[in-house]
Image (tube, rainbow, N blue to C red; front, side):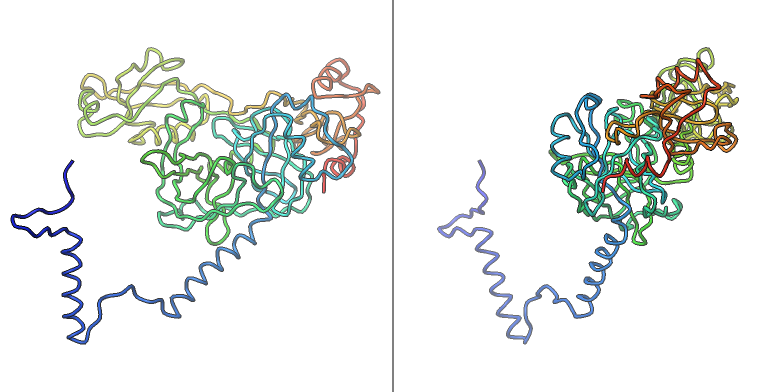
Length: 475
């Protein structure tokens, strides 16, 4: 092992530390002799201190202003349906923890998108199929149910019995830029079970990131993501990224935890117009569809582009082919255009396809064996909805009343009603609970489906919205 000292001939051993001390001593003597002092870290002027305090006050003020909009989410596994849930009593934090301790629990974060209690979060937070509770910043607990889920977009909309929630405002996605401050309130590791959501602060590190491995593993579109330095953790998923005006710029979705050589990175879905349209569809329990081309692609390397004949033109390389693309494309093709729009990356490829209505004809420009070719295909359709417990009937969407609601409000819960629905003309509205069909008691949505199938003209008995929602809320 080498010594860290410098060795010279003679009897003196001059280490770097000794030499530095000697040089510093000489420099100090010379500087003092000239009436100077060695450079010291500049002291903060009163104005600088005021500016830092102002930034601190801004963070604190922002946290107070947006905290009523954010909630902690606790989702149980499907087997929790067998657990006895306390009813008609005040559900305290300790009581909730006892219930959650009897089953596996997924924790996350969400935020209100409307005054009447609709909450946006990630699909992977609520995908267990069990019971849901939300806890607000003040520690109040409410049972919740899923209105709509989109596995591909990793979005879910929940509903709680609140009539005066503080809904967020979204920031225009075109205003996003590197260096913007980012603030997030969340439920890391489920620590906000009694309220007091955790604040994280950082900046936008980069835009248009993608996580292809995670996307492929979970069947989701993790493209066009915001990368941030805000220290987020498991349990922050589904939370809002706020700008300094308190507007939502993104939805926290993934974390690369600290590991060897990595300090941890956080990512969020960009709250652009396409995402907000999808959220509105989920809020109205609309299924929604995506176009399906039937190919798997990856960013083409310069060598792959040259090999296909694309030269310096960038594109995406076809890795696998199925469905409508069979006989039109083959592995190794480099796609450079979709409907005359240049495609430079898999991010653009996915974005362009998502903007095209399913079952529409698309024209692809691609290179193969040195030639630019064209292929016309008709997009297939794949559902973005990931919720088998929903049932559509005469323009309305029904689900089973969650077990953590009152026993007096059992039946089929109306999740959404279209404006032209015959049921709306009968006075049925979102939030109603169908308790009987022609005198027969309704226990769940499957029984409701069977009863109406056998007797579609039967009269529906409804538990009034005000009463049902009052029973559902826990304060």
